[in-house]
Image (cartoon, rainbow, N blue to C red; front, side, top):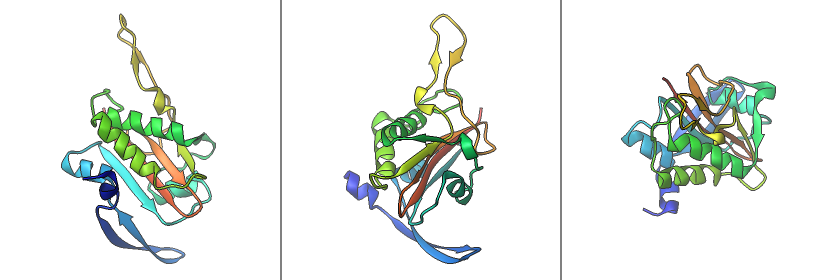
Length: 175
């Protein structure tokens, strides 16, 4: 299956009722959803792109079921967003256990980010691109710092906003 075939794989119509009226949106299945259906990728996975604009990360976070972080959201460029997603998709946050194969992690991150135009804004809750580093002779490790956006022990991902779309690719892990 080619990358474009995966991206266009399945579209499921979902009608959502909102307090300010009714809006219909199409939820397209992404590669990460297909991988998660075969084997749980994380304790919880939030993966969705909507044809809806939000003015800021907090509004999108609320809509997608995350806790608003206000000034604690970290705005990142597309390249850093890609590194954040790769880091979160390649290994889990709790034990650095393998999560996805390298090629799958790259493809899932690229597919998600590719749904947003060149002027898109990306937000995360920490510096996940740093990944965990273990000292050779020590029992300690240094790694990313983050502000929790869920009730999970570990959570991280990307909220993406452009002029017509919003999306989330967010993972939760427990230790």
